[in-house]
Length: 204
Image (tube, rainbow, N blue to C red):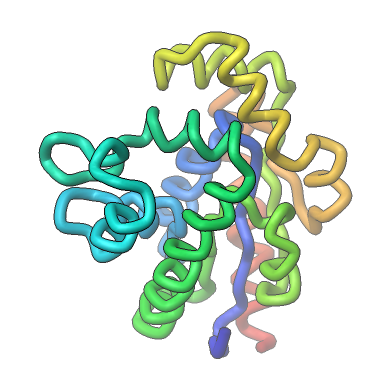
């Protein structure tokens, strides 16, 4: 991805607190490109991915207003690897193109790409200068996602099982923020990393 700014890949498992950390960096002036938000826009009513998704999967995977039926699609792709590949084949090129556009117009001393599946993708690690992992115990991830998404523990655990392990993410990390419920500690970590990233950015 052509980009002269210092680039950070921000990742973490579901429910780890990536959005909180991204918001804290944004409040300090960092440029944020969130691939999850881009994916949601692509699959919202009228989203650019929806015609191809309808053609590939049928109307049963759309809501009444024309958005992606996330619950139905989640169940389908978890049980059918070919469906997962088909969905990724539609979404990934569109996400990639919009991510590049957003990066080119981003304003800030450095750029943070929020990429939930950064470690799993295998490509992103080479596309960013640093990898920042938001980490927390898996039990806390399960609790947060159950509360946030109204899913059962078994459903959340199946999502976790499909993602990289905690150990794999930590092994890929240049920096780690622990988000175990102490917001003040997270804010302090962001403050420290922001200062460090600004120094690195000035040297690029």
